[in-house]
Image 1 (cartoon, rainbow, N blue to C red):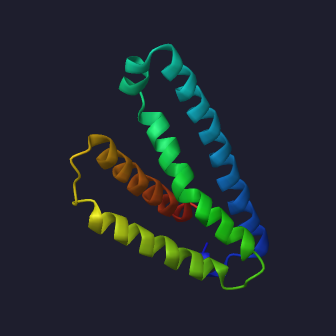
Image 2 (tube, rainbow, N blue to C red; image 1 turned 180 degrees about the vertical axis):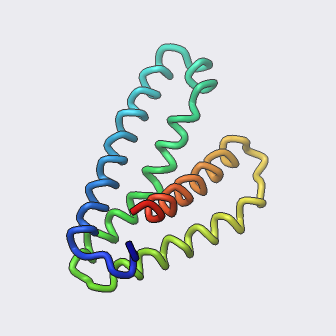
Length: 125
């Protein structure tokens, strides 16, 4: 499938897919919050999934809003892919800019992983 030619049904399928991922993120972040209240050290030691969910929510929410507000636009597929590629290039270029904060560096890495996973999704569409 060529993303330049995504029809309205395929855009709606993508919207449903992203909404499902964001719902999973809410569950994962709630689980992390609960474990944080019980044992903060253990929660942080095993916080990788929560970090990914937080990054995915941050990255995908603007894309979801963009798709929803442009679902009737016939060029949305091409413009969406262009935006995704631009964001991926910027994140990849800036990944070498390390902070003194390990948490910040890991969140930047997770954001890049989310963008890469989005590209992977289109590869298999």
